[in-house]
Image (spheres, rainbow, N blue to C red):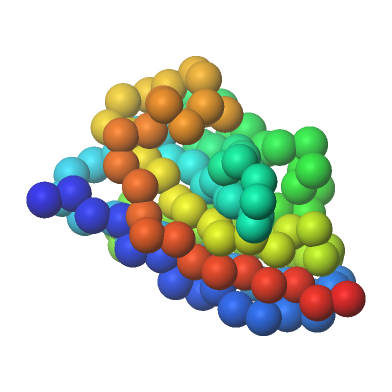
Length: 120
């Protein structure tokens, strides 16, 4: 059974850093990504690794997505965090390579979410 489990969320001051991890199991995933959802807002794309490496404009230069295939783990390194980065962060994965990685429908599997809170 496919499963994605996030960890590493928490509370941090503005300007600080956090690193989210997502351990996958059950099968290999060619496309992996991170999305986030702030209170009262729609879920939005953050970063993805597939055919290309993609980032939302709002996080470009501050966030870095990576993966360790030996550990079946996806990472999201978040630097220079801002209060507007506060959200529940979800990892997502799909067995196929995808070009439209900014769309949630490109991913078949999702984690349960990890809360990230950035205080000013």
